[in-house]
Image 1 (cartoon, one colour):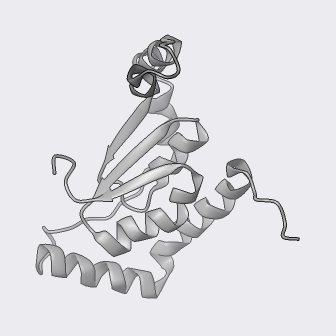
Image 2 (cartoon, rainbow, N blue to C red):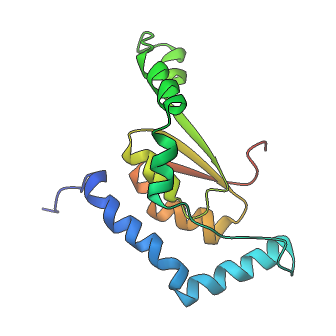
Length: 145
């Protein structure tokens, strides 16, 4: 008999640590750099990588305007079997989702998120492997596609 599946809250610290370790992983950095050059071409203007620290995310998440939107969306109670029920559950779109930190933060807050990034393997693939297990979704390409 296998061990029971771990909850998202049990997996979150491990997943965040793995994502935080990647920028110091030579293999990952090289794969990201090669993919960025392939996708954007040589030069420094093509791609950038950055992370949003949790305290910065939390500061924005706690803003009254953000909380008002979340409160409004979660207070709407359409019939569960209606198409409107799905539309009223708060969700977030993350443009330039990178490794999926923000997706993990939103998943931990109980919100559905979809992250978009242009680099299919180093960013989207990595995010799907780590953050996707905790309820965040990631797509390749521009959000308008």
